[in-house]
Length: 273
Image 1 (spheres, rainbow, N blue to C red):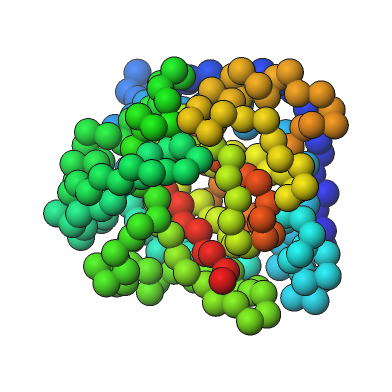
Image 2: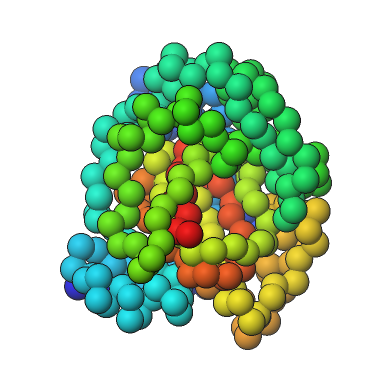
């Protein structure tokens, strides 16, 4: 059964809000099922924006996927795979225990990501995994996504169940990442693939290949949402949606896209090539 989203367009600048819940006895408890990732950062973005992308459950057949989406437009899939074990292994405590001393490669969060920095994973989590400042340039923001050492991370990736629908004559390659609220990658394009959120929420903005968005390659997605997004005319608005754990977004070949992490988020992409 196809689930058609209700499109509610509200242009409000995202703002920071504590992610803790206030309990009757005065204690604060971190929102459940966050894998421990929100406990070190009590801030998140509240504006999830509209959703104008088709959402399907298990009733979407492979034939329908190929005909309606694979080469033409994005789609969000729910419940096609069970990554409960992978999610457990990606908790903050488990990843620090298993990979804390391993080097990870960070990239600058601008369109071309020229600069790379290698640091221990634990150092990244403890010192760099924090909310994005509104005025920080992409070239000054270090982002952990992709550039994974597959030999070191293979024991984790082997527990991930990738989306089962692949394009003919392609195979999948994983890119794994963790980033703080307000971070993200500005507009860029590449081949087709999937993106799944393991913890947190990730807001997506997409344009077809022939409709290049207006953006500065060294400005963050957060600044684009603040400065450009609210004034876009109707014909220049993106396809967009916020995905949560258990949801997978498919993007076709050469589609422009930008992302914005609303919480401290753990995510994995499967690039089809």
